[in-house]
Length: 462
Figure 1 (cartoon, rainbow, N blue to C red):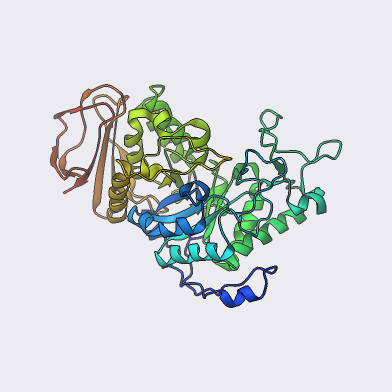
Figure 2: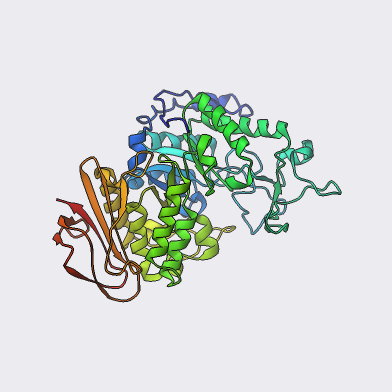
């Protein structure tokens, strides 16, 4: 089983990078006190935010993002996941700016975003707001300008002629078309140790709180277990796997993506699946996962938005319903940069494409959901998540209804998961308040309810 995830409070001193001039050391300010340790209780109520620094502001800088950290606190955000902040390779680069995931140096910051001091200030302000910073870590591959390419070609996967290759899809044997990166060879033990050394830098020297690990399923499990153990010798860290692989959660990671759940949401919104498919997904997870495993629930992220479409393209009028579901079901909800501003465009991945910050429907929605998740233990979604019980309805294929309970709190979620009006009954009873409207409601098993297409309610027990 995994180690209990508790961050240790401490005051960390800023340490300059080895290759920075000594005069910069005099300009450094003491790092702020870390927030109250992340305990299991904190994870129960946490919301995670994926920050796309390049597109978040017109400046595309650490400093511009840092100014908005208090706004994220308003939304209930507790964990900020920064997409890769490292220098980007120019060799074989895609587009004019390249991919964040084609890394030249794991221990420096991308000058496009600002300086190391700017990054340190971002971490400081996040900690002062009782928020935590995790970095996107790309262990599967590097950019073609990484020093290892020339100095340690043995660190990379090579073809029969000794040429370093880009990553290969193991299912097809063909390239993923990630031609801007070089595939790392995890049979090389020296490379593994160098990778862990670079991961340790950000935790020990810069005070970050963990990692979101890119394509974690393509990297050997025993590497992640070794890396996590080494990191936790420094302090407990929060580890998120871009994977849906239960064995990663045993000793390495605290949370994984709910990819299957996300795809089912998309397919229900498109009329290809129904509420009973969701029930089957939940039932299967119960057989695969331990009680303290955590899912990250989402309607969008950088991959989905840029390559598969905006949440409105994929989910249409169901977008709000499923956004609310990511908070109502067990797990930790994700907000991707721009979702709070009703972003309705696919962000360019290799070019500048600023997010427009116009508050519409979703900002107050996320704000309200964040407050409920923080205040009501029935929405606890971490290692000690509230119970989840499906409620029978007169049309279980079209209506999803469930109750969650913990610590004397109870919520009921009911949704019409179709694009047609429905009349139905729910096998539940009690006095509730519609959290979104404040309206009092009596629920009885024999009462019929009329819901519009994609209509939902979150009911809190009186």
